[in-house]
Image 1 (cartoon, rainbow, N blue to C red):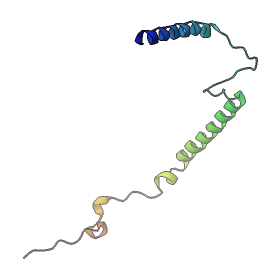
Image 2 (image 1 turned 180 degrees about the vertical axis):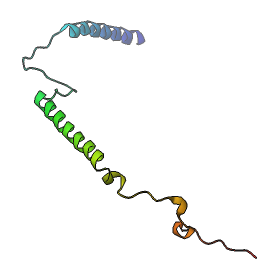
Image 3 (image 1 turned 120 degrees about the vertical axis):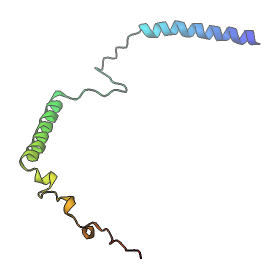
Length: 99
């Protein structure tokens, strides 16, 4: 029984190998232009150009306003010196004296 199954398995493998050679050599010409499977088609060139222009304007706007008006991001007031804060401002309770 093992020999009969082994023989049929070998015949199947041999036929698959012959078919694999034919599949490698075949050319598919469907005549419908480019067809993409699991890969998107490249966007039209005008879309790429418009996207680059919009991105450039957006980055110019951001960097220009960071340069000319940094107070919007970093704050408009000087940072206070923490060494001058009192214990009361920091929320530290008064020390209790033990007798």
